[in-house]
Length: 221
Image 1 (tube, rainbow, N blue to C red):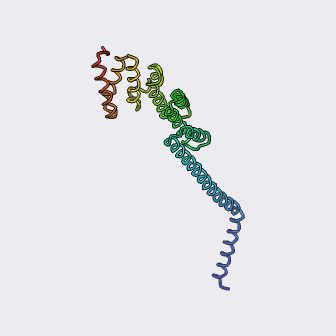
Image 2: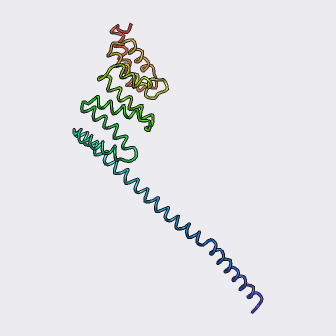
Image 3: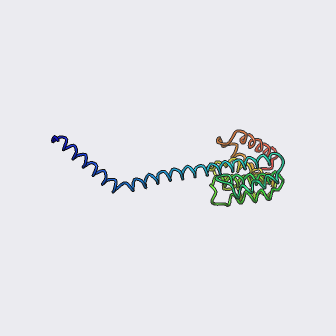
């Protein structure tokens, strides 16, 4: 046997010994890691499928409830929305609460609708923007079904110059003030809406119309 062959055999034997040593030391950990990766991937895929399935089911239930409401079946719609509120997934329980309040208003149960919107606005677990919308929805119902004090209690804070809902809030408060004979207060609110370039055009047009009506009546002096 030549010296080169002997050296190669020795090197190969040393590499095999090193490989066995490495496997004895790290092999079980490598297997455990591989198993953990496979199980983790399977768990993630299963969870993702579970989430998607629940979201799709809740979405279908919400669509069915809307169809019932739009088909003139408010009681059935309310039952479906209440079930979704209790058992739905993601944002659908909150959507169900808001839509249920609207269905109550469509039925003529304004007190019940306001109560539902008030419950949403008082729920601190809900994002503030949604709570503000609930306050505004309640106030709009109370323009025709409540007092100026009722409307003000819900939207006064929304009339601030920095609030994105200020135009609708001021309009609701202005209408309520005008109905109760508070013409000067109503005129001020409508003028604020009309002069706000950020307000939608149709909202400014309504505010201008109301301002002219109040000035023409001479009741704001």
